[in-house]
Amino acid sequence: MVRDEADIVGAMLTHQREQGIDHVVVTDNASVDGTVDILREFERDGFITLWHDPEHRKQQYRVVTRMARYAATELGADWVINADADEFLVARDPARTVRDVLSATPATADVLCVPVVNLTGDAARAGSGIERLTLRDLRDQRALADAGIPFHPTPDAIHRGNAEVEVSQGNHAASAPGWAPAVMSEELEVLHLPWRSWRQYEYKVRVSGEAYQANPELAPSPRHHGMLDFRRLQQGRLEPTYVAKHPTADEVAAGLADGTLATEGRLTGLDATAWPGRVDDVPYSPAERERLLGLGRQFRVVELAGEAEAARIQAAHDVAVAQRDSAFETNRELAQQVEDMRRRRVVRLVDRISTELHRRPKRRSAD
Image 1 (spheres, rainbow, N blue to C red):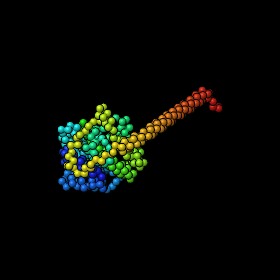
Image 2: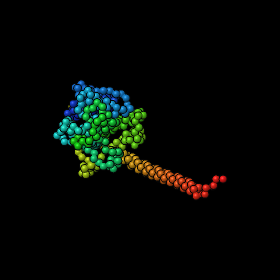
Image 3: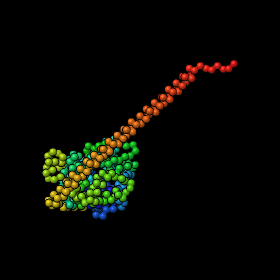
Image 4: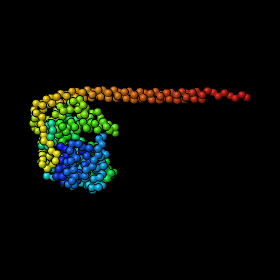
């Protein structure tokens, strides 16, 4: 399911074809940036089936489930790969294709959880980013948080073709009657380009936030990363935050040395002339990048302080609730003990009265 992904969707589809994928089902979500024109090129040569869904209410799980079932029932799919336009499924072994791996997967596996790795590099105002974002982001959770990245991506789920499959929101799980539990794939991974340029990222955050607001069926947490970014956009803080997500030259050198960053060149082999929609990179000037980076780091310090205070308040609240619940339980136990004592006291009184009655001499009846 795609919406306004003209800068990357042509590369992704070209990559899928090179990986041995037979066919791709695409639902366009009312794109206005030329995405549909690119998709029609692939439709004309029979590589994709193109559907349209103009609703903007974050109904992704319903749309993807419908496509996955169609792939099984109408296309005879052995495997179904649920992916976004910025996700490139690859074999860990560069000598193999995705088709090679899936063809050799044991029949006992119904669902594969595939790890997702973010690719990073230099920030840019515009551009598809494939030649620029060539670093695997392996930083630990603290380093990610300092950069304004909430967490590493959740694994994607790919699965056997099945007419009754249910795909979860975000493509992170899939289920069908009788399926075995999902297993983690050790031979596949997804290379992810979530923030290719400021132009792409600003637009994605805005339309995603508006779509969540328009769908009362979905209630993302205020701490949901998309809603956090949507508030940053509304407050005029998103561009510095976007720039601060990317490592500086010094951080790249240190990351390559300690293994928290690693080079990744498997996507740079895509022939730029072979896929439509490529957007040339428009870099920030050094001065502008430094200014935005400084602002982004300052904003992040304030946010981290706020998150720490919120965590402290939540922890204090949790302690108070636990103490209240403990006191309630203690009082309940005490009340039960008192009631038990009262019952025992009543029993003893009854027993005493009964004993006294039995001890008293019986009155003789009158002659």
